[in-house]
Length: 204
Image (cartoon, rainbow, N blue to C red; front, side):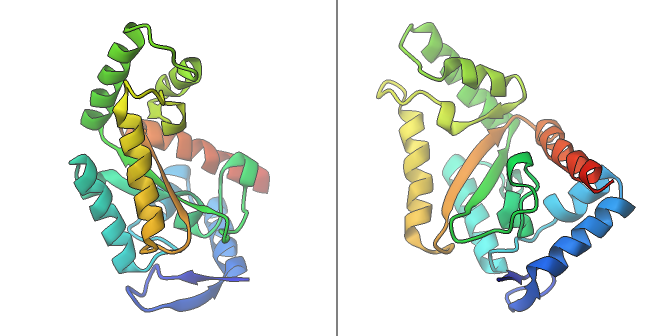
């Protein structure tokens, strides 16, 4: 199976093998340090499964919805690279059942949601995933699947409805679009660097 690599060709599709992309990445793992890998692969302005126009449009739609900068929206995971670097899916190729994962990196937005959740928790309303939420919040990461689903907390439904609408539009392919919220680049760096360091160790 082959993937479409549009990293250097704008809106022109160039057919490049998954094996070739992975081989290049693994060569860079041996030659470059973790920050250089992150800059070249994770934070570079490309996305392996989207054309340049689709990539820009997706970031614009998300930024507009949450009133943040387009620069605060980063496509991550296997949709970004063409393969995963997460521990449980390491080097697995992006496929038809894969998601397009988005990281929203905004201290202002994060704190707004955090304050709302603090007040929600203090109200005494039942929150099934409160402890799991705290685990990730300590790491500067808000996972939407750990948010309250109560009608008293409408932000959760608004979040899921928005990303479901992006998925259902078909504008970005037949893939689910999912997102998480990070307090700052420091915290997304910490998670992505952990994955890169583990990839490096695996090759040694």
